[in-house]
Image (cartoon, rainbow, N blue to C red; front, top):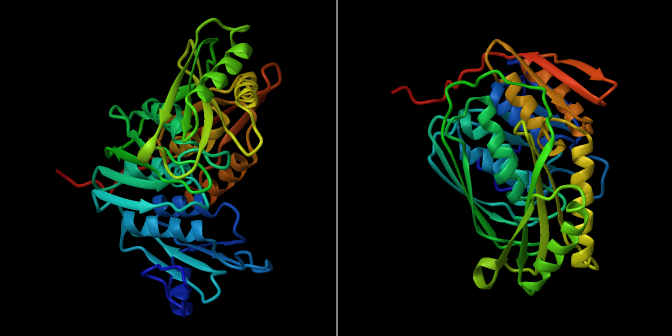
Length: 379
């Protein structure tokens, strides 16, 4: 198949027939490929995906999808991955998660490190051993979550679910599009089980923090981005501080670039984010102003979880103990809506959605599955 997967089998009809007896879930098309593999790994249910870009000029798996399968193969033991000759059908039978402590993976340049890192946030706490994963590639772009927002918003959110020792993310090198060259180190302890969460009070925004990164461009570019963003935000709130993070030489990756990540924190501990990286033709003033307006739009949705992290919060609610978790969400993204359907397929959990007209928010509640980390090494 040309995807370099050690478990790839060109004639997988026997494996398909065997997995079908294990209540294999079947999906058509390439949409939501990554999230279904993550849910399959956690639930232990095999998944069979067919007709992957079957009618397109370049049918089958793309490089970043094959790369994600290779990462899952490194993170697990006993996983079976069967791909047909054209790459348009994949049968994934998950094994045990996290039997290796150290993993290195090149994410390529088709998708950013955030594409892979989001999946690690969902999987790593339930591994057999604490994980150290070194990822290389693009650290910041507009297609996937940046490493800055994952570090400052996504990982702290996990503490609400009982992770006393939160995962850590160190940015060793920056990498901008198109050539990347960035590097991060993700470390995560194991967690035996989660706690239920009740997060319904949005509070009021008390401060805004941010970070402007620059790679292989003038450090003055960051100052221009900061001034433009503060011009929008300081008229609404006085406590605004945006750090500048300039990278040069080998630590700056292979391509010039810059961007801005902003985080608004409320009096109840809610953290909401917005981020924007420069494309060709953008000015620093454009990036600063637009990112600030994007943050204000996110705040206006009044959810206790920002749009980018909705699916991760939903997953942790389902994996919680057999108790009710309840969280206030802003407008649900199309990705989150499909994720709710997939959670029902893999875990049999149906969530209760209660829209509130006055706040334009939705209270989502569910009973946890009592998920226990069976992969964890018994001391």
